[in-house]
Image (cartoon, rainbow, N blue to C red):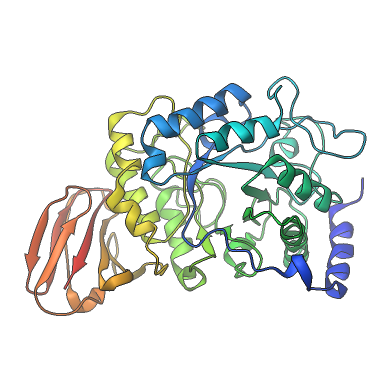
Length: 412
């Protein structure tokens, strides 16, 4: 097996002399707004199969999530046969996915949804590196072949996860660029979602603007269903830990290229000792991902969604903030310790305002039109969680529960 570092150095040299004309240079933009969808990992890990994914696609439609805008059904790690075919092709695990990936993609497309899949630019997927799954089936040395396989299957979304402690930033750039060009060369629009952080000590997702390479890129280590761990950017991360890493990167985000603070933990429970978020915390998590202009990739079991979780995931007023065409990520305009004010300008002149309470007690948070960038004068405000409308002469104020957010759409 070729060591990843040496192989990627070779790749970097090849990329430096490769032509950038033709299909490989096509500026595909499958993500004019942040992606909305579902991923299997946070709830199911490696315990996945064909019937689960079909049932999830069914549930995305029947639950109303598809009507609210969710479209991607993404299979994470452990979907593949641990051995490639004789010609080097990837293939579905014959027992878990007996119908194969093309048939599964066709089923998902038949529901009006899009199909996503997982792979890595190194030798081992994350589950393989951690010993949870056999084989060594990463895309290293197979990039063009794998990209064409994905296109032939009808893949619409590729999650491409580094999953190695090796590799410099330049080598990561080379590896991720190689698959970008391979995907483009297929002629199929495939949303390209990368993660430079997994298993890697440098967490380069937050150190480099990946917007010329990927449609979205992970900014942090993996999220867990917990409010805070206190970890700066090491595994595992809580909701507020991830917000603090991602907020300074706001200028990288925009139409076609998005910071990805990881998947949603709304409705995910009992993972690695973390019991899960309360509904108040989950609504705050959802609100802040909307403010950050982040991909909203659910990770709960869609086959059985509690009412509170369903109400959060299908809140169209909050999703409209996330999907706003202007594509500007929110700015933390005031930080008073545990009490914060966030502002996000929206297309058409409205402003989304989040009054964010990290503390253990309820608190009143106030701001002004000037501070959040709204026109001074008579403000018309809508609370996006309660639907309550109110008016003000310039002051914005609300009582915010502990670990909660009051999210307002403000119009002058």
